Amino acid sequence: MATKTATADPLFWNKVAGAILGSGLIAMTCGFIAELLVHPHMLKENAFVVPVPEAATKGPVEQKPLEPIAPLLANADIAAGQKAATKCLACHSFDKGGPNKVGPNLWDVVGGPHAHVPSFSYSPAMGALKDQAWDYEALNKYLFNPKAAVPGNKMAFAGISSEKERANVIAFLRSRSDAPKPLP
Ligand code: HEC
Image 1 (cartoon, rainbow, N blue to C red):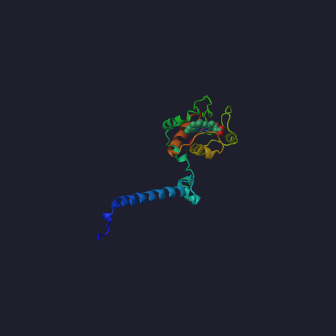
Image 2: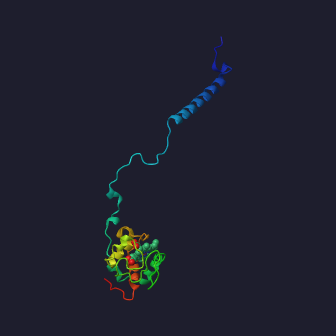
Image 3: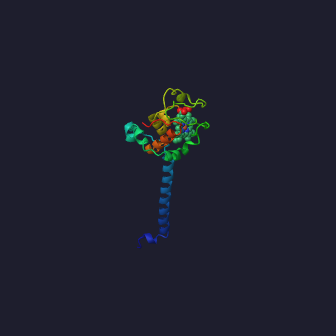
């Protein structure tokens, strides 16, 4: 009596193929349903914001007060200052009797009052300081960070971060006068 072996079944390989195809289909369907149920999408903002103490985000450099410019002025390079001041030319002239542009003419500004050109229409912030002189340290602070030094003023200039370059530019400004102010 012949036992019915697997190979004797004429449909055996069909069944095997069917089983493989079937499980493949089931796997695909599961993947498809899972995708429908769980919708992974990226958030635009972090769902959880980890608070970082403010002190940790500020570098020590920013907290340091600006070093006085006075010690650098004696050895400042006027020619280098004039070269660096080409980035001011879009808005300022430096000659005696030169025109106001976006900003005021800067002849004789060192030692003069803030808002030193009567014919220029200054911002109220700058106009409010006209009792104060543009001494070397005031210019140093203003040219380092115009926005912070005179809040609300309208000079749209980022500032000069290099101490040496500021000294050179201030020395050049000082030279633009019939009677340059004494060095500090
Ligand atoms: C994008 C234009 C712009 C640039 C660039 C610019 N300034 Fe000015 N500056 C102004 C304006 C506008 C004012 C007047 C600000 C106000 O009235 O608030 C001003 C004011 C000043 C003042 C004060 C003048 C006064 O009479 O009180 C000084 C000093 C000065 N600028 C220096 C410089 C120097 C030096 C540079 C280049 C390193 C420079 N600025 C670059 C627009 C500019």
